[in-house]
Amino acid sequence: MMMKLHEQTVLVTGASRGVGKELVKAFVKEGANVVLNYYKSEEKAQHLAKCLGPQVIALKADIRNQKEVQQMVEKAKQYFRTPITTIVNNALIDFEFNPLTQKNVFELQWTDYNKQFEGTIKGALNSIQACIQDMKELEFGRIINIGTNLFQHPVVAYHEYTTAKAALLGFTRNMAKELGEYGITVNMMSGGLLKQTDASKVTTPEVFQMIEATTPLQSVTTPKELADVALFFASPWGRAITGQNLVVDGGLVMD
Image (cartoon, rainbow, N blue to C red; front, side):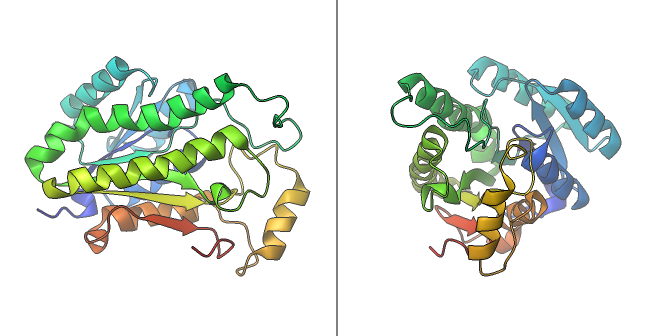
């Protein structure tokens, strides 16, 4: 089975701001139904949903909580009267890209790592498990995980964040292997440090200047540019691609 973008119902986690907001807008522009997941930013989420119209529903859920995720998916199915076909695992739990406050090796605790593993891996697992039965029955599914080029090229040593995202690549490939027989693709797309999101607003100008100077396209990737790549993975054009990590960073990392 093949679904065009306007036939899809898309769950975007952590979607009230930054990359998530641009992902929602990109899918809505193509005619898809979108479930705008949020956890803390209720005002921003509801405002965005209202601005974009009935194609969007904003639903609260902590992606680390399996029951909340399942309830969110059920509410979305009731609202749109159709199952979720497409997941973008984007949510980021309690992290800022601030080189001045990032803990170094002497200060790091296992709890720092565990918080990121729970948000990144457990969150993705919960969203997939909540939707997988419907995808299997449809014989169609698109799962897109948001990674980072920082685990290949740590401009700043954001230890716990980049380690969790590196684990997400292993998670992506294993899911791709298992779910391919059901017509479900699982891919990852990795931006660099994006200009500009809530998480990167504290990034110093010097870091952005260093990235621009060493990037072939001489620019820092924007959230909108990254969001456009999700459309490719979800569209019929990306139907033969699974288990891949596409780096979207203007050529800084050539993998």
